[in-house]
Structure formats: structure tokens, C-alpha cells
Length: 217
Ligand SMILES: C[S@@+](CC[C@H](N)C(=O)[O-])C[C@H]1O[C@@H](n2cnc3c(N)ncnc32)[C@H](O)[C@@H]1O
Image 1 (cartoon, rainbow, N blue to C red):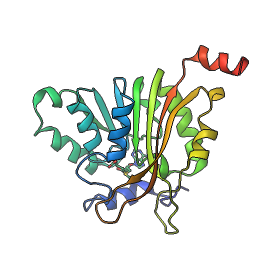
Image 2 (image 1 turned 90 degrees about the vertical axis):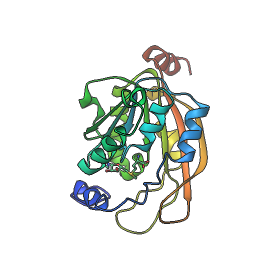
Image 3 (image 1 turned 180 degrees about the horizontal axis):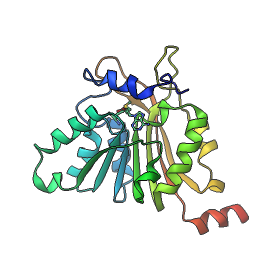
Image 4 (image 1 turned 90 degrees about the horizontal axis):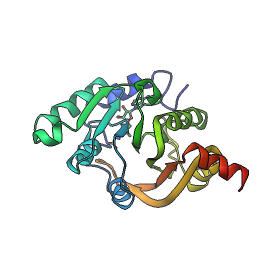
């Protein structure tokens, strides 16, 4: 069972009947700062894209973006927003209903995966499988951008705490990852004060470099 009960889609469908608390009308500032510091490679996959503001921000910067979410309403809102964008920005965007825990099913490789508030929805065992999927989805040298809660709230249907130690233990050179940076930041909400968060830029090493690091540490 997930952190959001045995029917997580029903839970998220119900949240999208109103404006969700995470829908702040633009990308999370900590995520856009991270992307400025470590420019992404195209094409970009936005996992759990919600109503699409981060994808749109990236397309406005000239990036080619695929945004996926499993909630139809979220994707419909994202697609509506495309309608009011200049055609050169709109043409860079594609929103689809899909399970972001299995991005390999898209049967496409991406230069970057942006994850704003997705990883922290899942228990550690689900994250193990998700990270394997990320490895299949990213091109060699591609980057994974993460923004997650760094605090645990003792209430049901809440994200979990993610911290730097967990990220360092999961994204090791032996497993083919290089962490550029982990930052202590904030996660903004439409309805509550900012909460402590963590952001990270993590690179997928080309296979031969991962091997070299394993053999010659
Ligand atoms: C905390 S919200 C973040 C939305 C957006 N990234 C943002 O920063 O505003 C998490 C999103 O993940 C989506 N989600 C949860 N589980 C999913 C899954 N298995 N596949 C695709 N989307 C999922 C939810 O519908 C929701 O839109």
C-alpha cells in the first residue's frame, strides 16, 4: 500500500477537485534556482507535473518538455495553459496522462528528469524501483533534479521526509550516479507557510565511468 492508501489515484483525483495546495501558480523557486545553477539537457521529462507550471517555465526558457501526471484533470489544466502561450513555446510542450513511477514505458530517453514534489510521495521500497526506472530513462550524462520535503508530518496522506543522507546512500557512484549538489531549501504552498525541503542535482554517469569508479574507487 502507498502512503496515500490503496487507491492513490482516487486520493489525487479528489485533491484536484479544488486547487491543490502545491499549485502556487509557478515553479517552486528552489527548483528553478537549481535548474539555473545546473542547466538541463533536452529533452526534459517532468514527473508528476501537476498542472504544468514547471514544464511551462522550462519551455519558456527554450527547452523541450514532456510532462506526465496520472490525474486527468491536472493534465487537462496543463493542456489548457498551452492554449495561451506563444506558439513557439507551446510547440515545445507535450502533456500526457501516464504513471510517472514507470517512465521507461514512454520508451524514450531524456536528457533530464525534473521531480518537483514527486519522489517524496513514495515509501523507500517504491523509491528503489523508481530510481531503477530513472536510470533506464536518463541518457548517459543526463541529470535528475529533485525537490522534496525534508520534514515528516505525522498525518495521513502526507509526503515523507527526504534528507541528504538518504540521497547520498541511494545515488552512489557504484550505482552509476554522481551528486553535483544537495541543498537545504524550502517547499512553498498555496495554503501554509513554507516547509523545510531538500533539492538536489544528480547526474547519470555514462556506463563506462560508473564501471571505472567501481573498479578504481
Ligand atoms: C505534490 S504534487 C506536485 C505537482 C507539481 N510537480 C508541482 O510542483 O506543482 C505531486 C503530483 O504527482 C502526481 N502523482 C502522484 N503519483 C503519481 C504517479 N504514480 N504517476 C504520475 N503522477 C503521479 C499527483 O497527481 C500530483 O500532481
